Amino acid sequence: MSATKREEVSSHLRYIRLELREMHQMLIKEDLLPDLNEAKEVHAQLNALLDLLSDKRVKKINSQFGNY
Image 1 (tube, rainbow, N blue to C red):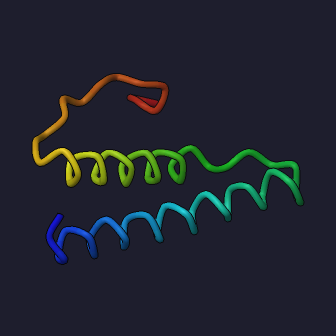
Image 2: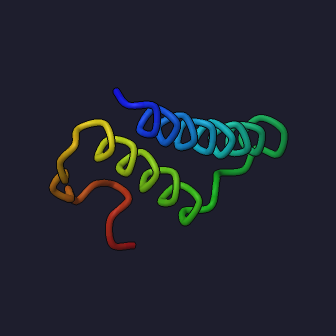
């Protein structure tokens, strides 16, 4: 893996980790569910990371985050 791609992957993972940590804190401290848009954003970041790692576009799959 090239250094540029490695840095992109690392950046995606840092962002995803931060977002998931914030969602977890909401669940633990405030007993609240995360906002659906926040969950969709993390899902999009995971898809972007998968695309980056696979070097090809992954077909969009209707999932639990689709069309709400």
